[in-house]
Length: 255
Image 1 (cartoon, rainbow, N blue to C red):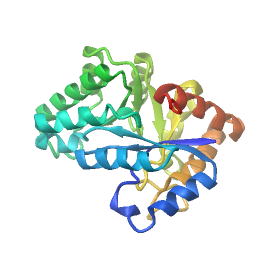
Image 2 (image 1 turned 90 degrees about the vertical axis):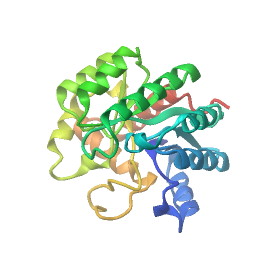
Image 3 (image 1 turned 60 degrees about the vertical axis):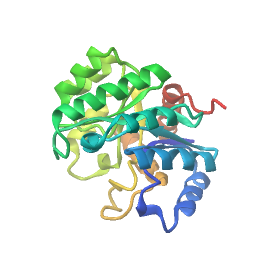
């Protein structure tokens, strides 16, 4: 059994065949899927989707791109969604200085507010970090956050080590399979197995051989195969360990 710990099946990319994609994943050994909220609408859609399929769970959060649009009502609605038994994390949340679609101050305040929500609900966090490593680390440390995952890891080795020191899991996506992704593969090699998670970030970042096409949860197996090659261990070991890790962090199959 594999677990796709981060995808966005609620996105319009899946409107024409969402159920087929989900059933294909289940039939081909994807034991659980976590559908990650990236906006108020997406968070609600994720909870709704998780209510329809017993092997799909949801997270609720607001992506830093939308920080300028957030108000008290938005935060209250996200807080309400987090009380659903199908919600296993707050995310994706964090900072993104690469695209700069919201002000730095608003991103930081939103990040802090949602970290506090996660703490109040005893939920782990799913962290988005792009060109904001030091600020992400400072905010996590200032708020004593140690339970979560840094998703779609793209930082440097120093950032990796500091995230691990804080207690975080590290998640790589299918871009690890790209021909020019040597640095990502090096980082995956030094990430301890017991802190490693798998994700597709579907519909984005389809694996090598499918680039330019839509990604989907079943393709997480291509990522697992590549990590097994990198670690020089059997695929079955990657399958077992990453499944145990995901179940431990997100407390899956709780109901």
